[in-house]
Image 1 (cartoon, rainbow, N blue to C red):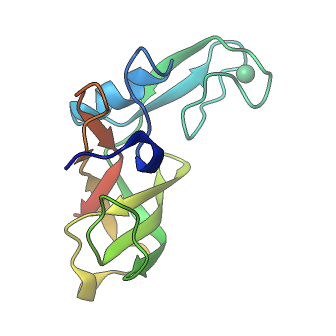
Image 2: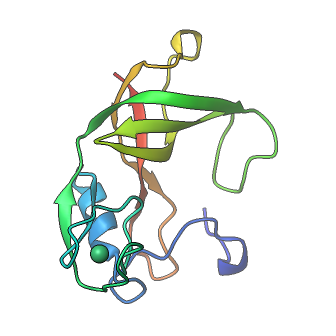
Length: 142
Ligand SMILES: [Zn+2]
């Protein structure tokens, strides 16, 4: 499916478009990473090009665990954005000390619950307008 940029719901992920491209490149290889400030050592989620604590723009990439637990979730059955089939489960997950908002894919709907273990399952979405693959962080029930 081809999306016009005006209705493209996904971020531009390539090195030409964002200094955070490493996040998406890592997702494509099955790793969840984020930024850590080189000045004050604060680890951010989501990854940031500058530090929310000290405003430094020097950072390194660090791995987060590929597993977590459900902190909260909701099921969306209508009004889904282009590119998403319903119903979709969106969750706030506890992952490595952070709260990560992500879709749950292939979730066992009847078994969903707070505290349930989940694992990273990066979601390939529509290619960008230049034909580069794009990935979003997503999880599945463990
Ligand atoms: Zn900092």
